[in-house]
Image (cartoon, rainbow, N blue to C red; front, side):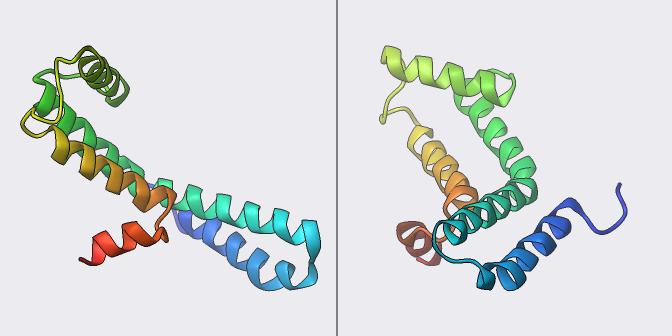
Length: 123
């Protein structure tokens, strides 16, 4: 275990500094590039915060769905091959639910402000 501040706290502090102290001083293309950098830092912070638990949940779901074990990458590759070959499809019990959960988990990290994602989470 590391002492504080945590990596996420450090990223958030830098993001806040850039947003409040630097952004007001920039305009045009430099302001745009700074917004891109801030968004990238926010994405990294969300990945660090959510990815470990989400990856394990996805791996466990895939393992159950496919009836085998392996790394997340191996299981996703196997799922893709089974879908591509026609061995699995929407009629496969649990597949649609797994894909929906995995998509929502990815959106929570990649695009948490996406309108359809927010509606789904609230509903």
